[in-house]
Image (cartoon, rainbow, N blue to C red; front, side, top):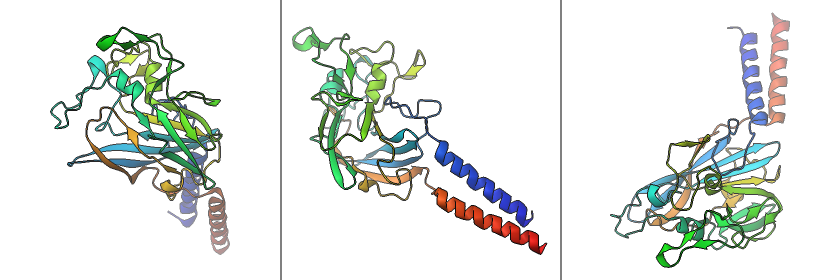
Length: 298
């Protein structure tokens, strides 16, 4: 293979990378991780859940960007908590020495959240915004049916996570301190599950069964959309996550295991840097110059 052919291959390779960088996206903020045909988070890290007494779980933290905005998806470890409840609740380890109870819908709507006591923080231009996002909440007052131990949440309720709507935090369940204007949307995996035909408060739906093309998502996930260019180098594997956010404390009732701490681990998606457009242009100019030199000396 001659130098010219090699240079053409190099140029084509970097053009392909650049196109991937600028065209990837088409995100749908619905609380379901990459459920859309074109949804593609470009950068991801492991999130390690370390449990007291030994053992661990694995979650994920994912970054995405397109022309419409910047996106974040935080997926909790299912070894710690999930979205199943009622008759279809997965095993919450009754043999656990702490004797944690089974998961119920009441636990999901009354207790489970990200950023307990506003410990979830985003940092924009050195200014901190603090949040607490409930996994699911009633829009307005919850309608309760029955009494005593037979109390249930009526299926006639309208549910959504944290009371956050596109106009901002409109409900006491979504708590924020500081500027939230850069946050355009927040959805959780329970937002998605609540939109599935057949959703009910007595029991989560069967895992692996399609309901008009949708599947129950068993992980606890939080998906965010931010205004375009809110954060610098959002999908660069060279960025420092702690400069953008602090995940803070999450609350799960009951958890599968007693959580000690969580740490952001190794990069798992998009771990190779893609040249910025200016760097690519310089590379292309250099390649063209080498090609020109080759022709002159041939």
